[in-house]
Structures are given as structure tokens and as C-alpha cells.
Image (cartoon, rainbow over all chains, first blue to last red; front, side, top):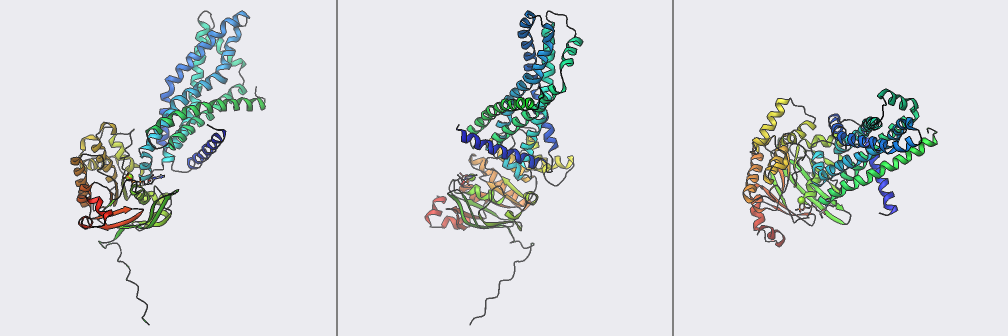
Amino acid sequence: MSVSSILAETGTVTRFAGRVFREGFRPRFEVQELLYQCYVIGYQSLPLVGLTGFIMGLVLTLRLRPTMVQFGADSWIPVMVGMTIIQEMGPIITGLMVAGKVGSNIGAELSSMRVTEQIDAMSVSGTNPFKYLVVTRVLAATLMVPVLTVLSDAIGLFAAYVGINTNGVTTVALFTNQIVARLTFGDVLPAVIKTFFFGFAIGLIGCYKGYYADKGTEGVGRAANSAVVAGSLAVFLLDLLAVLISSLLGLY
Amino acid sequence: MLPAPTPAPPAAPTANPAEAVLTIANVSLAFGENHVLQDFSLTLLRGENIVVMGKSGAGKSVLIKCVIGLLQTDSGTITVLGQDVAALDHNGLDRLRTKLGFLFQSNALYDSMTVRDNLLFPLRRQWLTHTPAQEAELVKQALEDVGLADTAAKMPAELSGGMRKRIALARTLILRPEIILYDEPTTGLDPITGREIDHLIREVQKKYNTSALIISHDLACVRLTADRVALLSEGRCYAEDTYAGMQANADPQVHDFFV
Ligand SMILES: Nc1ncnc2c1ncn2[C@@H]1O[C@H](COP(=O)(O)OP(=O)(O)OP(=O)(O)O)[C@@H](O)[C@H]1O
Ligand SMILES: [Mg+2]
């Protein structure tokens, strides 16, 4: 892929995003489909995101522990792990898992609907398919990724507590205190805000790839595949952007 | 000097049995250099079935997609039930579409929904409102019309090709359209199932007094369903006649379709 084609694609995705906003704010609102998509994107991703969150918290703690003990800094483990999970690992891992699961789902679903004329059938049935399919999915992903991230963070922190407690006697209260005492609003808020953008990007790219899929069955595979690749890349790029903006604003 | 000819009296309004429900006038459409339709004209009367024939890639699907507003024409006008399709806004088009049925060449059943939900989808999306009891009755009626009353709970993937075609037809019928556009209703089906679909098309025409534009190159289907046949060639309506008339036509272009 050449630089110019990436730029051209970025342009069309931006226009696509503009259309999502334009159509999203105009009635009629597809509330029922939105709730269903929240269920599909949020609830059905929960086991996956929860499991990866747990493993992440546990591995991080067990890895960090020997070094910290060596330096006599074991009391810093909770806050270090907590910061890492809340600020970076939680959002990124959740974003990537959702990009993989949800992004490919949306890409494959919409592209197969395009190929088999189901999207046209919706138009014919008096439904605006863009509103019904695209706006609902983008919005659901935007709303659900932050929720999933917070849940993944919580599970990750619980796993960290388990990791610390394997051969220690830290109480839950002490563990929580150590984290909460050191966390500021400026640590948490940007980390939560960026996940809305992760969700938006994942939903948007999945829908874009699916909605404009090439005819034929290979178009379906291509749409699913490129939705995952572009979605994951977008998560990293947005994360980089979030760090740059936060440090410019002096939040760290 | 002769006096100027007096204009013909205006056509009688709606109640006229020979009222035109669909008028395609001088329609052209090109995709880049590919001039698919060039000055195509055709008129469909109330209660009439017209079959449009033409080679693969001649632009038959494109033609009926223009009629239902899925594609925009470059020039020419399409008038459906007295309304110019190109002049309608989004809501107007949606309203007009409640009176139009469209049977997709690929059926276009919603994979993720049961047969019942497939049928309910157009019903619930329209401006009309129904009670659950009325909805259930309409679904039952539509499924009985196509002879598949016991499939309501099935998924489309569980059905055979012919059954899917019938369900697609049931989904089209549920809104009681005045005009139905059939895109190759029998292609890909065995002859027996094909004839069943043909009879269904005729039954629907009689039962609900619909008009239909049918795309087909299945001769048996054409013979059974057509009141008139039109041949789409090089973007134009090349010939137009009854089935017998077309069969007797010596023009090689027409003749080749009827052997
Ligand atoms: N959306 C589109 N964009 C560009 N070209 C198109 C589009 N739809 C159709 N065409 C072109 O228009 C021409 C006519 O296509 P159409 O689908 O109407 O053929 P058809 O007569 O229905 O053929 P078949 O009998 O195989 O279904 C083809 O050359 C096709 O490539
Ligand atoms: Mg076709």
C-alpha cells in the first residue's frame, strides 16, 4: 500500500465518519437495534476481555515482583501495576481484543449483507440501512469499549491482588488504599476518554470496510481481515496521540 | 392552410382499467464508459405482467433497480403510480416503496433473522402500525400464499433454494404491493420448482390484482407469466409484443431468444 493510497483511504474514512454524525443526529433513531448491538458488542465480548484482563494483571504482577523485592520496593507493586493497567494495558489490550473480535464481525457481517443484496433489501423495505446498520454499530462500539475497559481494569487489578497475595499477606483494603492514594483524576480520566475513541475507530473502520466491500465472497474475507488490521493499528495510533496530548496538557 | 391538429383528450383518471402504473420514459444510465441503458422506454398497465428479456449483462437488473430508486438514472423519467421517482425525497421514496415489491435475484433474505422476522421486517419498518395479532395473521397469510406455512421459525440457511425464493416472495407480498418487480424468479431452480413459482406469480396477480415487471430468460416462465414481452438489447427496448407475437417475430435478435 502506497502512502498516497493510505492518505486517500483516510480521506474517505473521514467522510464516512462525517456521514455517521450527520445521519446519527437525524431521526428516526434505531434504539432497538442499538441496544441489541450493545448486547452483541459489549456483553458477548465480556468473557474474552475479562480473561485477557485477568491474565494481564497476573502476569504483570508476577513479573514485576522479584525485581521490586530485590530493591526493597514491594510496597510499590500495587501502584505500579495499578497505574500500568489503568493507563495503558487495560485500554490497549481491550481495544485490540475488541478490534479482533468485533471489528472482524462487523466487517464480515456488513460485507456479506452487501454482497447478497441484503443492504439493498433494507432500503427497499423503507429502512435507511446506513442508520440501521452503521450508526448503531459505531455508537454501540463507542459506548461499549469504555465499559469493557473499566471491567477489564477491575478484573486485572483483582488478578494483581491475587498475584501479590500468593506469598504475601496484603489485605484488599491495603491494596486498594495503596492504589487509590496515589491515583489522581488526571491519571484516570484521559485513560477512560481515549477508550471512547478506540471504540469509535473500531466500529467505524469495521463498518466502512464492510459497507463498501467488493462484490463476491472474497470481498467478505478481505473486509473482515482489513477491518482487524486497520482497527488494531488505529488503536495504537490513537493511544500514541492520547499520550502526546496528555503530556502537552501537563496531565502526567 | 390546415388548422392545427386538436390535442388528444386527456387520459381518463384512475378508475380506467388501462391506467399506466409504471412509465419508463427515455431512460439512460451509464457506469463510466459502460452505457447500460440508452433511451429505454416501457409502460406497464394496471393488472398486467410484462416480462423483460435480455442477454446476461444487458442491464435488466439495473433497469428495475432504477424503478425502485436503488440506482439513479442519468436522464429520462420513471413515473411510478403517478410519482416521478427521481423527484422524491427520502420519505417520499419510502412511502412509494410500500406500494412496490421487489424480489431480488439473490433473494436477499436476512441471514441473521428467522423467516418470521424476515417477513416482519418490512412490516415493522413501514409507516403503518399493526398489533401483534395482526402481524401474526399477516405472516401466516403470506406464508400460506407461498405454501410454506410451517417454516416461520426456521433460519434462511436451513431452507432449500426454491424455498428461499418463496420466502423472499412472501416477504415481498406481505405489504400487499400494487406493483411487483421480479428479478429472475426462476433462475437456478429445477423446472418443477420453477413452474410452481410461475403459478405463484400468476396467482398473486389474480388474487391481489398486482401489476408486475418480471425479468427472465426462462422461456417457460415467460410463456406462463407474461401478458406482454419486452426485449432489452443495447440499452433500448428493442421489441415489445405478446409471447406469441414475439415467437413469430423473424428478426434474428428476437428469434434467438425463442428457440
Ligand atoms: N453498481 C454498479 N456499478 C457499476 N456497474 C454496474 C453496476 N451494476 C451493474 N453494472 C453493470 O451494468 C451492466 C448490467 O448489469 P445487470 O446486473 O443489470 O445485468 P443483467 O441484465 O441483470 O444480467 P443477468 O441476467 O446476468 O442478471 C453490467 O455490465 C454490470 O457490470
Ligand atoms: Mg440481473
